[in-house]
Length: 165
Length: 465
Image: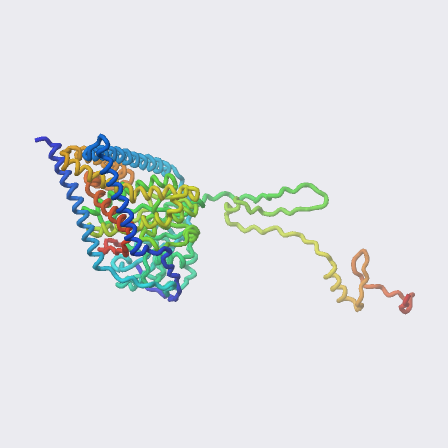
């Protein structure tokens, strides 16, 4: 007897049986499902829930956000270089620029040494402070403004008493 | 390993987010049955009265129709197979040459549980072994009626992870379904990325680190993981293991080539919180909340990627009854999602990617199962009524050979068990036929609007730490 007709018959029967099995199982499932069905209850728009969480522990918050070991490769240490200013000073008579550290991407290669930021030499107007100092030294309430700043007025003995014009 | 620590309890109010769509009324079902029944009767009457006026007899009409249907079916089958294989191959190649980055943002892992007392501890303990340092675990107890809440509460605290302490929190809420449980966890999370999974699933150690790196691309809104069957060495679970490898994961690789993954699986899905909030969180109005969420993220303009090495092991249904219950829910859920997004489906100008995905889902969920069943029925009729018994053998042999080669390729790509390849011989004629019959039944029920409830699979507790 040939093999193909036998196999064909087996497959045919198997396919038919699968159909019957699937439909039967489905009907059975539906019957069971119907038995266990509950009445639908209307649901509220808001529900109360409870959050249970551990107390905050600061030491655990300091875990560095690094990647897992096999995937984390430490950054190669780059020798320290003096940061270059973004602005290159141009010779000019009136303005003077201070060399500022750059905040660009190359900054992440620093080895960690602390560098003091250069401070601006601020030239303050002498008005307020000088005025107060001088006021403290002199008994006069009034100061005379000259090209050298505020100075206590010298008493003009020749003038005598104040005259109104 | 897990020790008790000081905990705080805080009561909150959650938005229960009622269903957005109302189920059709009973009168509407009857009207639908009547309308479509009448249309079918009219079609049969037209054939019956016009046939004598043509050269065809009823038998020859059936024969021609069967031949045309089979040719179409075979063409679609081959086109589907080869397009998936080619795109999956291109994706795997593209993936292999990609560089790793060190993007490691803070991640919240949300574990919704409902009556999972046997597996919840194992699930959380497996999460503590993840190869990632910057994450927390949020267990959401969705009104369990067993000891799940108590078991989960014992896990709350700062637990020993692989790279330090991992915060484990618990949210106890009244039962409201998986979507609401996930929403509660997402709202509580402060992380940029959230990983949503099932309570009975287990992630492999590198899942998180491998999946998270894709979020370095700001266009990626979500990453789908690779789901594998954990409880093997049983007839039905082995067949499902093959199905997951050959049917689901290979298709997902092909979809990922186009950055249009159509379903982010429930056991492992990572989302950018911004994308999930933009999509309006999970909706409880479908039974496939993962499919619905995926469609919403795609329609918001985000891309979705698939990470084949982010593996989640899940418990597959062991019996035929449980399998049917699961597939019934999946199919009806997918159809509900398609119906919900039908505007996008019919109007490609809104989002062409989303339209393409919806049509693919429509084809996989509706057209393909109907075609497969119709083909098998026509073979049975051809063999029984017309004596063409050998036809069914050649048909089976051709498909079995195709399945065997595809299974071999998929098993090799995923470095899976080689013994699963042999299940390909009965895969299409037995397993897929059962699944497709279930799909068609679900389709009919969804179409006429029969009410359904969430089915809860009985867990045997395969998940171990």
